[in-house]
Length: 337
Image 1 (tube, rainbow, N blue to C red):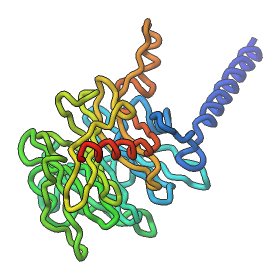
Image 2: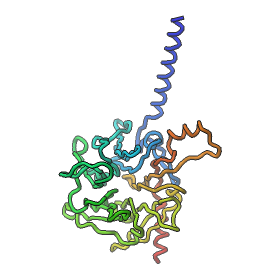
Image 3: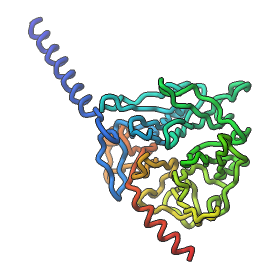
Image 4: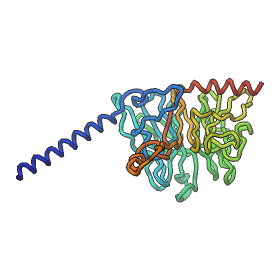
């Protein structure tokens, strides 16, 4: 009898290990873009069950060589920056970045510059010389420099950009001009920019009303060549979700087209647009959304299964081929004429 019990237990262990090994093998990610099938004109989940999970994922950035990704994970009231790296063609299991993971403050909105030399992000960590405070008391832009070991220690962005009010969601052009959101006052969030001249950031400029038509433009992304700006907001009478992705095209001489809704390719009913970004090769628009999968006749078992899967109502990352932006540009320019 003891021998029989031992044999049964051994078989259970072997089966469990085999199943786990098969599960692990399924989750191995290799090659460009984590081995994902590249999207066309229809948005796809980005790396489901590897990056896009049952948690909140947002704020994506990738190194120019395509071998490092960083993105934000929210769990309850906590925000951390996670990373995965391609080592010998295999992507490492996502984990908190070395500079993030402290529960005493929130880190989010990473952005790697086009040359790969700097990583910008927003953090609520206390500025130098100020005491730590909980929550969203500080909201400043921090920077790290690329070095032979990875990234330097984070430091506050120098110059006139960081203030006692909130500033967040930094993105940069090829020449170093930074676009970001500045909290002018309570419930008033406006897109600003600051030009980099001789290595120093200049006095921030408030972008015109075409880009800032409401009191709440809360996140934006500038194209590397400054040809367009994607903004998250809600314009009454011109919306699909509860907040959408809109786009404005740069006509030159600081003239911009009025914000245009980017349409149902990236905006979904009853959802929130939150974090626009571009792949480093400029071919894909990567964005977050809290789209939820619903069954026509749900049951409790399905609900439990869906709660630990992507598209459960938390934020997920999506991507889509960038070609549709050219069609939006033609439409915007036609309205100008």
